[in-house]
Length: 109
Image 1 (cartoon, rainbow, N blue to C red):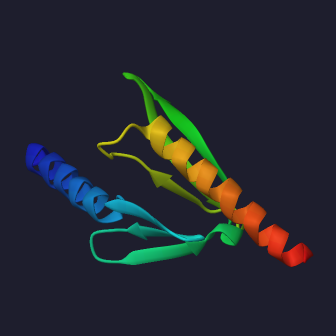
Image 2: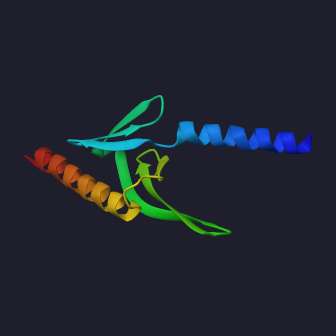
Image 3: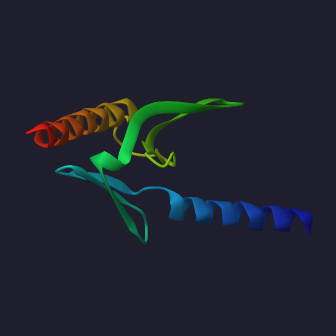
């Protein structure tokens, strides 16, 4: 019975991770669209406080991910893409910097 229970728990964890992992990230002007398997979340550059490359230390080494931190301190973890995570982080940082500086320039005028 115990091996079957372990198999079921592992299967449930695998299914849940598929539903909670972002499938794609799209930049549209000053908004970012994160697509999941069954839903989509949209955030403007004003709602994002920082974009960082972070990692978690495991027994087998480090697992890197891009952390998009919102103003309400919630973090969205982006990982598992075919493109390199440092490249994704750099593109998102540059987009965020450009989008927030443009919006601040419009507010000054």
